Length: 167
Length: 163
Image (tube, rainbow over all chains, first blue to last red; front, side, top):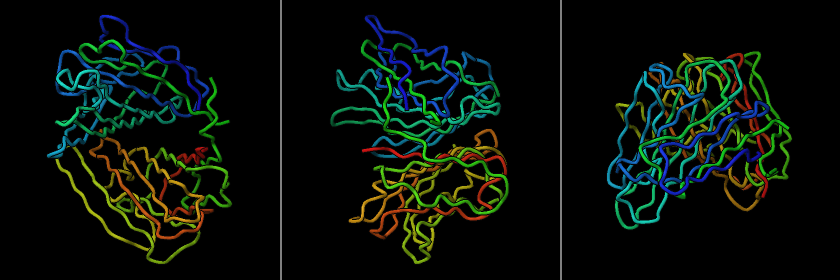
């Protein structure tokens, strides 16, 4: 497994973190992120591939728990893949960030791509989220860019992109 | 920057419905990770495996499944690993399936396996996660998937994670 790039959000925050020009010599892609959102409290983080915002290019189902109950939801035709618990909400304990991991298997193949997401938020002594998402990117093109996005990711949010190779 | 802690040991692309075995597995790593991308050969079979040819009732599990409208959790035991029971890994469309064998080469503990299964969500499949245990202290040297688990074209990668 090799680190391709790490991105840290700078002063003022950013709506997204984007990895582009991804090398095509790996088997799987792994994204590991630690982020916090300044505008919303729902804990969602969106994932887009190859810059596509086309309705129907994505589908997902997620499952999450908040310490008192568990919930599941899905979308069969949408513009991104959501991971509940991907961002630390704006009302969480100050200076805490989420843990968010995405595995994109066989990312250079000419088939639709399966996406696996694991998330957890941090919030001392109060409600936090832990979630799983199963996603599908319908287009058959190889993955050349990965974008994490929501409303406003705060400064010091970070994401690292790794490739898992066959050698 | 290279981080040589996650190495491909071997891979397999399914060309028939015969069983698939990873044998003589290297004992040089801390954990094993198996990543399967593809689909099942028969509906409802899920995915089943044995380690070290053990056919005794030494396999235990607890899992949770969800499909967007319902959540289910259950547990049980068997004479083999029952990695996915939700139909998430089924005949209809491709999914991804990730197995992590913890501390597989240790000889002083029962072995734990964490699993994730993502079905094709455009075909109504969901996801599941499970915690499995093989109640045996032997090092794992062989993982044997049942015949018919995987459809032709399914890829299986076996990785070793170093200490």
